[in-house]
Length: 515
Image (cartoon, rainbow, N blue to C red; front, top):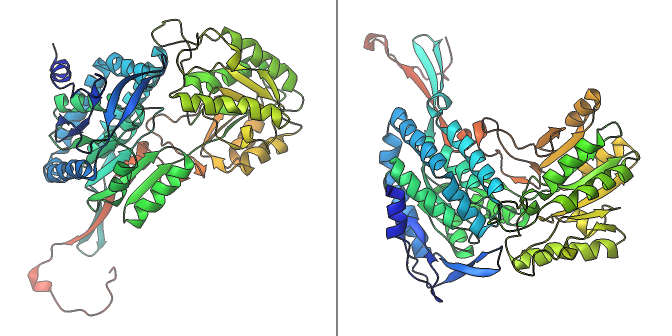
């Protein structure tokens, strides 16, 4: 039995009301029960039943985690780059070795099918691999002889204790987006994962401990708004990263910066996929289905609007609707399942509501996912759904649905399609499908969106670029992970050095200048 397996078996946590396991915190290198007396249910989305409870942190719990991180910071910051890199490589290898354990937790608590869950782990690993290059990433600059006998150089140093608040839809990948770079740069970290699927965060804590991360360097506090607000207000936290909806992202950014923190807060999205008349319709339909219904549409980079340009609407809608009955919807425990349930019953019902409001406002419901009876009424399932003749004034266009509902807007010209993309308050991701290189080049130049795909429906950047949108999809000055992540988790210090002969020293009250 591995050290991690022994730890999980020995510290499963106290029993919650009803006999289910209670998921607690990870503070100062060990699992820790909460002290607030408050908890929330963790559902199995495939069955609709409560699988366990999660402890909600009190202010005192958060303070303990931050205190542990603050105490661990001086030694972690002083650790050599080569030693930190060695630990990061071990983290990467342990996550890889336990990728199926992590994926199983995602399937159990989020509802992702195994292939989707394993894909999430793989993209998180890319970010850990990027962080393993920290000796190169933290190289500064040096200018010799800027003035007589004077050299100037810049170094990047860690901020201190930093925090991350992560969403339910990627409970393993998004934490790895954050803590990989944060720890590599010499910071200590406090994670507040989603209370809907928190167990992956504790397994990550155990893997980091096995990799040699010292106690207190990585901590996890579970919880709700009490924990979030304390992290935002805590005077010992220097920076905070967030991924979630736009209203909460705005709150996180405004509250955190008001308390003197550096904040990057990624908000919502309404991602358009523009299909030009020259596009390969079959390829575009494959892409729309893959990007619209993968992970049950619970992705901030999911395509939620297809913009059919210049008369391709009928053939495109037909091609998409033909594919939907072939998607196998079911629990992750079924190896043949391609799309799982939504995360909670309330969320499923909210998403399903757009299948009523869309037609009521003039759209055409082409495929109704509620009509699929194969789920037997159990779990939080909704089949792939397609709404045609959507217009920008409809709720199903204006809102970020975050579920397996794809809308089709029909326009006559490229200019109209571009206006839809640019007039939308979100600017997270977009895509264009065309065989015309000039049109694609013009689109990437014209669109006011942070991430653009050309014949690629989900343009999530690889780990050595940075992730983030524009407009109401991002609050803060920097995108997440990659080079901008390194900048976010460090601050620059410029040193001007001179080692003169004491005999040449004199008083000079003039403004310093190069000579």
